[in-house]
Length: 230
Image (cartoon, rainbow, N blue to C red; front, side, top):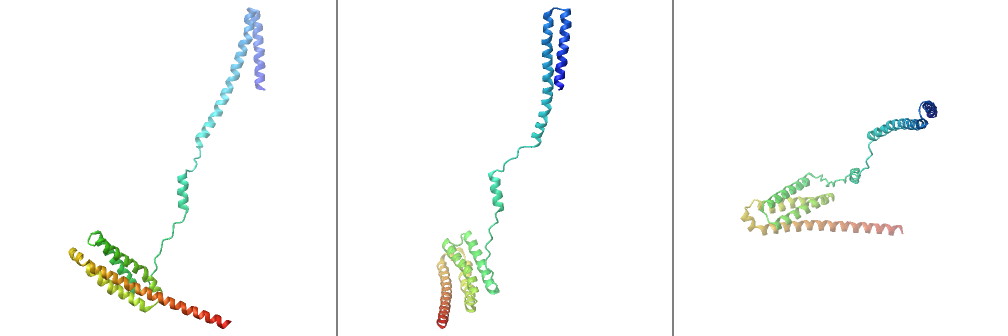
């Protein structure tokens, strides 16, 4: 409505000016007055639109600067988050040896293992001696908790004797020798390691036979019970 009123006022004013100019000057100049009035009206009509559009764009720019675009999470960040959410695998806990004598035997085996590794790093022992000795010690570490779980006192005694006497008398004197003496007596050490390993195999076979005998007796008892029920 305001625009219509302004346009009507401009038209009336231009018409009045044209009448005055027509009475004073030539009619050609009076005809040019409405044209100038129309141009003035158009210029006034476009000016407020620019003024209106300019402040409306400024808040949009401010909103864009205040609200930066949300970045999508990258594949690496999502992969790291998924890996962090996964629970870590549980560590393998070695079986605990409750018997103090067997526990001390295992500790002694660990000390010998460290000594063999140290001598091997110093090149005081050849590869064959290091590998066969470590294989025997690893087998003892693996079998002693299993043998202890059976609760056989005679087997426990034999294992302790095997570690404290046979293993100790085989490895410790050899480690005290000089470099040349070690090379000369290496076959003696390898034979001693083989002897300790064969004794350990004998004990395990004895236990396996004992377990088989117990299984046979249990099977016979079960068969007898079924026969009685029949």
